[in-house]
Amino acid sequence: MFVKKMTCWVFFGLWLSATTATAQKRAGPAVNWVRFQQLDSLQRQQPRPVFVFLHTSWCGYCQLFKRGTLRRAEVVQQLNDNFYSVSFNPESTEPIVFQGRTFIFRPTGINTGQHELATYLMQPYKETAYPGLIFLNPTFQPVTGIFSALPYQSFLQLTLRVTDVVK
Image 1 (cartoon, rainbow, N blue to C red):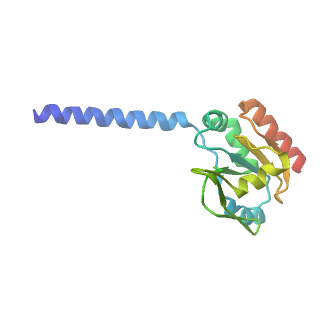
Image 2: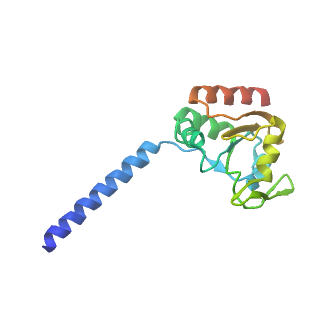
Image 3: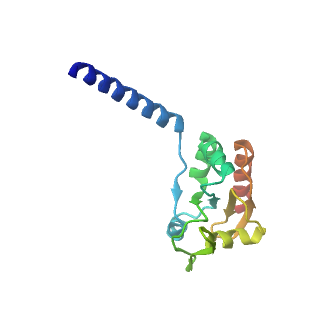
């Protein structure tokens, strides 16, 4: 009886480790995400444009973009080599200091609201939609904003245009 149980646990352990290794391999390369609070010091070291990915937990298109486009090797390499990338949930309640200003979460009802920083970033585009793909120049001025999940080819072309504009 003990041997049977032990054998089952051994096979379960092997299956679990194989599944985990396969999932990690399938995940592929990852974007090097930074926090808003890090951007000032990073820009002083090496100026780069900034990509801000605005997403929520309930947004299906955000999840598709995150699991599809943002996992493509070409996209990951382009973002990691040429941008500082920030992943931001506009429903987070953590105060954020950005450009010397403290942005906070503003409730709009029971269990609803939006972070002031998201409002600030979307304001030039007069949009409140997710996913938000916002590009800033190295001095944090808006370059462009798209409020839609893009296929990886379109997103890659957009990043190339942004780097050309910022140069």
